[in-house]
Amino acid sequence: MAPQNNRVFVVGVGMTNFMKPQKEPKAPHFTDLVEQAVSRALDDCKVDKHLIEFAAVGNMFGNGYGQRSLYPLGIYDIPIVNCHNACATGSNALYLARQMVSAGIHECALAVGVEKMKPGSLGGGGGKRDPTPTSLDFHYKTLMDAFPLEKTPPMAQFFGNAGRQHMKKYGTTKKQFAMVAEKNHRHSANNPYAQFKTVYTLDEILESPSVHEPLTKLQCSPTSDGAAAAIVCSEEFVRKHGLGGQAIEIVGQSMKTDANTVFSATEGEEVMKVIGYDMAKNCAQDVYTQAGLGPNDVNVVELHDCFSCNELITYEALGLAKEGEGGKLIESGNATYG
Image 1 (cartoon, rainbow, N blue to C red):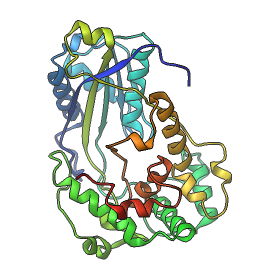
Image 2 (image 1 turned 90 degrees about the vertical axis):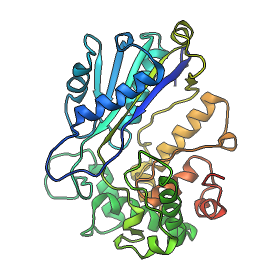
Image 3 (image 1 turned 30 degrees about the vertical axis):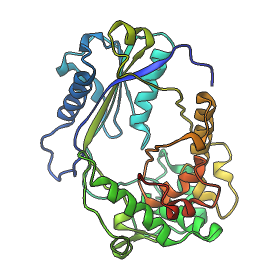
Image 4 (image 1 turned 45 degrees about the vertical axis):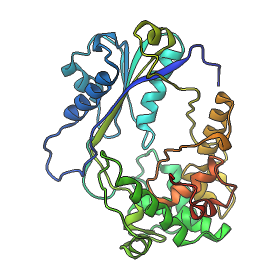
């Protein structure tokens, strides 16, 4: 990655409550969610909206949500970029906003992520005889070469089968995957924005309905409606507006796609690779290099836990545990606070 030219700081953040999608479209609409998140971010830093010079709005299931959401807030006449990139959509919006400031193109930028989703399990396309190309064609081929397709949610098959491969190769247990979910549900009780705040025992998680072995229902994230926003700006902007007391510098950030070896991975680990192990590992190494730090320096991690298997496998990709020892990390108690 080319060196960044300017330091970049987050000075304001805002978030909505995350809620269960409804069968019938009704308020709050995506525009309401963005209004709440952006208003909270602006209020957090007391920055006037007219100082925003660029906005990146992430949304996976809509088109042109950025303009439709920001115009009612009085944010006009600036570049507004819409982006969607599956589970990385919101972080991609932040990536774009940071790049604009780092490159010296803009002094103050807005990053937003918002979704209004459908109830039920997330689909994924692919795996059918329809010849129309989809974004996951290569991923589905890898999945189906390793495992027969089942009548279970497609995303659960990807991550559940990755979990199966991890179990077979390293001896990871269903209990260890369930421990990830137990910890995350326990954390949610202290999060005022969380969709679910119920705490479950390990046995309750293991005994909840099976979705796709080894995943049970309480190890699978739900679909959610919600939004979040961040204001990022340059060092000069921080000084000019007296924001030094709350400015948090982004000292490293990286974005990767699949490595060219992912779709020809060694038998027995190909689904672990196809759910993102290599690109997470490459991103982590890139960020550690940018920051001049390593995994042993990290005290807090916010990790995407769409499925418990994904979190445990990603422990290893991030260097938080040695390859094959993600299960030992969750058992150690070092993946929670206290």
